[in-house]
Length: 223
Image (cartoon, rainbow, N blue to C red; front, side, top):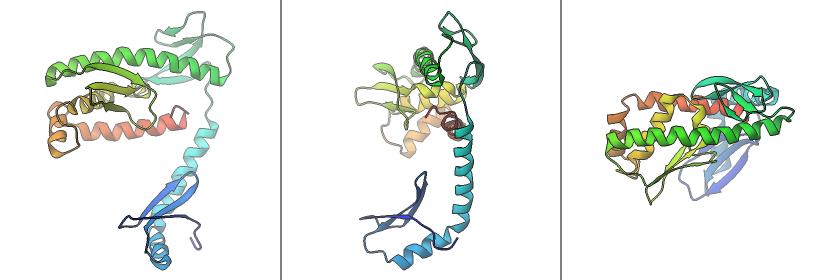
């Protein structure tokens, strides 16, 4: 990979960092770092770049090929259910939406149903785990966050992205416990992870599973 094109961003940071985005290769470097050192760093990451670029190209191709339509099966709590044209609207082991909609209309209807289902599921699981963990959140809210699965406000309100309801129950429970643990420890210190592990011993596996779901959501245009 000779003469690799990259976007250089200098700042007061102390180390070099390499990021691969849809716009290309991004290198973050200290203000005084010489170009020769930056290019040597990029060259040292050659194998990593080849692998990541191949993965990204595959994901982009899958995204471009994916079409959401009647008959498509989409995720809810880790399982796939079909989208069906119907006079009814909602979820009954299938996503029931009005007929004759374009792809964006279908997606909009499905998101509306997801938000309704998310509120029910997340509220139930927060109630269940809050009792176990002996915490008292003030509210459970559903939002459209794209980069955060959940959050805990200073007023003890627990918030979740509706997208999370597409993941499996074990993944949903991990995120619920994660956010409730912030009512006891706001940072991500060893004590925080100890609280999570006491309730979800295999939380590391579930966190990894969540990352895999995130890839699927991106391919199917939900993120």
